[in-house]
Length: 256
Image (cartoon, rainbow, N blue to C red; front, side):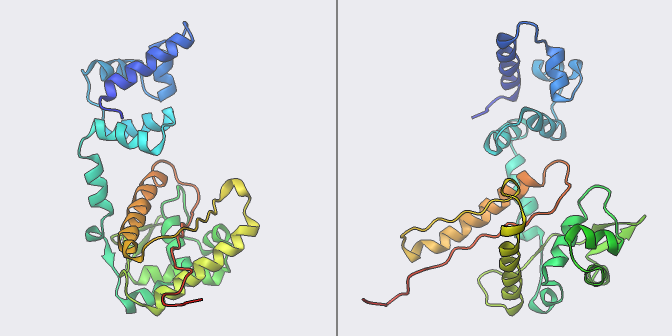
């Protein structure tokens, strides 16, 4: 548990000096991507460490997701609560059934994520090439998002201007089912076409009590939030989809 980021940085510097007597604060600062004077002032407490610079440091140190979060929380005790507030459903635009029906096809959400990729292009040919879809499908999806006021195009690039989108939970919806079917089909396709190092497919089967499923769904949603925060931090070059399925294999009431 990282309780004091200044002590952690000093300890990391000392540890590297032990391994290499020629290692210096200047070299450490270069590794972290900041100036020696800035690093010295941060460690001595003479200069505050901003969350932006702290994120740069945790990436340079290649900390694990848990270590990164504790380091950032040591810098700003309200960091975790701010993340939860930013990603909470209260801050998202909850789409009604008739609204989601218009954009339930997977290409729409892939395009929204592409808007965060550096040097993106609103040109349908670029979108089609990045998503490996027909150009007319790319153009139609882009234009639909534009008409709905979800994205805007400026200087040949596009970005999402609406609040993050979400749908209802635990309510049967044909549009949501269609979206799930498409993601399952995509997962099957990518299982064969994407090399193992660039994907992760895993399954676990367990015996449990159905009374725990409600809490399990809450844990899954919290896990998704944390993973999104980790993956969306820093430079973005590609778009990924995370699909998690939890379903019963046994049927209640069935007897041998």
